[in-house]
Amino acid sequence: MWEKDEYLQFMYERLLIMRELLADTGSIFLHCDWHKNAHLRLILDEIFGEENLRNEIVWHYHDKFATGGKSLDKNHDTIYHYSKSADFTGNEVRIQKEETTKRALRKKVDGKTVNLLDEDGNKIYAEYSDKVIDDVWDIGRTISKNEYVDYPTQKKEELLERVIRYGSNEGDLVLDCFVGSGTTCAVAQKLNRRWLGCDINKGSIISTTERLNRTIKEQMKENLFGKDFKGFTAFKVYNVNHYDVFNNDLQARQLLIETYRIDELSRGDFDGTLGQDYVKIISPNRVLSKMDIAEIIDAIKKNKDLFTVKTASKQKENTFENKVVVICSGAELDVRDFAKKENKTGVEIEIRDIQTDKKELDFKKPTEASISYITKGKTLSVEVKDYYSPLLMKRLELENDGRLSMKERVNIFDYRQAIEHIVIDVNYGEGQKKADTSFNAEAFLHKEKKGELVETAYSHTYERGGTYTVAVKIVDVLGEEYFETHEITVK
Ligand SMILES: C[S@@+](CC[C@H](N)C(=O)[O-])C[C@H]1O[C@@H](n2cnc3c(N)ncnc32)[C@H](O)[C@@H]1O
Image 1 (cartoon, rainbow, N blue to C red):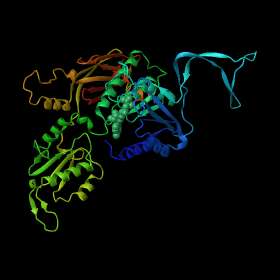
Image 2 (tube, rainbow, N blue to C red; image 1 turned 30 degrees about the vertical axis):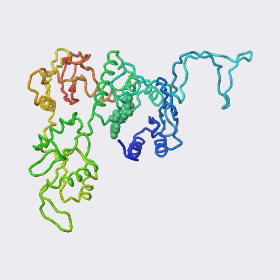
Image 3 (tube, rainbow, N blue to C red; image 1 turned 180 degrees about the horizontal axis):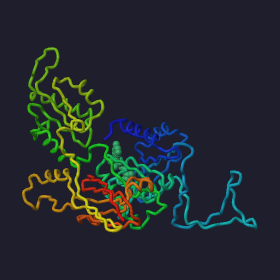
Image 4 (cartoon, protein in one colour; image 1 turned 60 degrees about the vertical axis):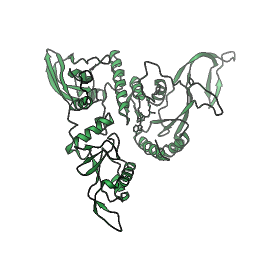
């Protein structure tokens, strides 16, 4: 998808930020294949300094069949390890070997490695069933069934386990800024590290969220969140754009058409009309780019007869009565400037950004819930009695549009169908001091199987009487969240 050097520029900008964010004793591991590894290494050298290149790790996928041919099969990737400084975390990682080997014991004396000898001057041998890892990692690509999450670029946990064990300590913070299926975060969670993950793909966030919920739930079941636990006991999903509103491009388009009352056109270069103007809708899952503007200019030129001449000019281009309205969600910084300079058609291009032009939009109404809190002695019973998401209802309405029979229609008969999971913190605020997290989940109510309804009631008995803040978070099937806190007193 990248043109010429765009990819390298994209990586360069992000790697600069990664260096800024990295702890002084931190490391970055950049995974790439043969296409651009040479270019990326030079960029990394420039940003992190050649002297901070610790290793060029070769990930050899031994389970990939070599088909032969004139050029050899490409069966390895590269993982560049750079540290921010000479003082970095680099732990010894030992892995099991398939066969044990016998080796002479050695030690370092004055910088030289010498054999250890017994009283009679003979070498001392020992059997080794494990070894310290070096910079060639033989790790297969095949993902086992219990790890598989159906994400196209999923990495094996074994690979990330090695990186995380080697480059960080328990309690450290691990970031994967292209988190994909969430392997890095899941492994970090299991290894007692704190973590952050980001991805531009909504599917990635859903996969990762589900995977981490499962991981945390298993850890809870095994009672792993004791005093020594330095990781997170819960997490939060943040949206940095309005991508969450739009899962499906067609639905999103439909929402915009309805909201702006656009008369839809089923063919041609424009999506509809608004009065006498022509409308172009840009997928709200991405920002408006200069390329879009260039295409719109071409479309205007191609369809000049759709526009009514206001003033005819001999020297310059004519000006026109009607214009093109572009509806988008976010725009590249210089798009307006670009449109002004490049559009010499005489037809005005008006850009309406729904992120700033919110007055007509009503799809982002907050979710609602009704929750009861009943105390008896030291026991608190919490129950989610109702949940309502306007966005979900709107989606269903669109989905069902045109489906006449009840069988075809998707309906919500029980509010619990809309809920993906419920997380409850029975002593909210306390967790902040304890584990450096804002939410310390005591209960995680989750569907056991697809299609099942979530459990909505939970009881907790406090050890001591007092006043507590209870926090409840509901996450629905679209990833929308509801959050409330409630103060209770137990005797
Ligand atoms: C190779 S995959 C990551 C695989 C991941 N480590 C795993 O185990 O599944 C790359 C990811 O980068 C994401 N991505 C691409 N461009 C991005 C951007 N500008 N910001 C954030 N994520 C991006 C893609 O959506 C994709 O999930």
